[in-house]
Length: 169
Image (tube, rainbow, N blue to C red; front, side):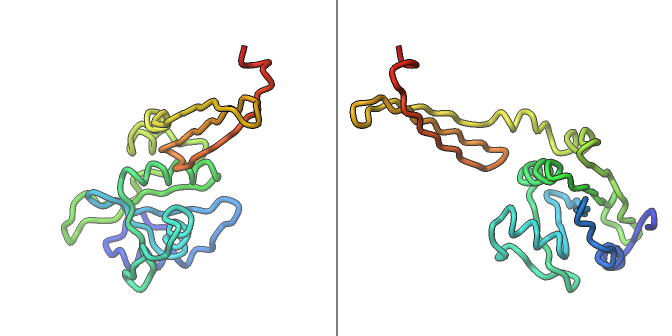
């Protein structure tokens, strides 16, 4: 692959003609001023997996495209790395006609530090979660309910535990 591309259409054609590696998929993201873009099968995959709808897709250069905010990119990048995917971030130094699209950084499960620094500290966002507990009675026995909401993974976990007085004393 060339070290840089002036024309994004040429770059996208090169990337789309590469075979999709199912063992370690490579996701290419294009850094914009305030967001990231992703094209082709990668855009469809992001739309289905993280947005849970294809309505976020638009057509650009004859390919499906999805735009991703910087904040949401943190969650997506972390999740893709956990799934053993490789991420490639492309950028342009400036927006002139002679500026080249170049690889800004690559990240995988073994080399996530650079991307983590670029997108912000994921550790801090990972601690952004909410925990709640409730104790009530069910058929005369204490019942404990626990809820955990994780901002990073965008998941809610609910648990209920029947207490036999062994733990509540």
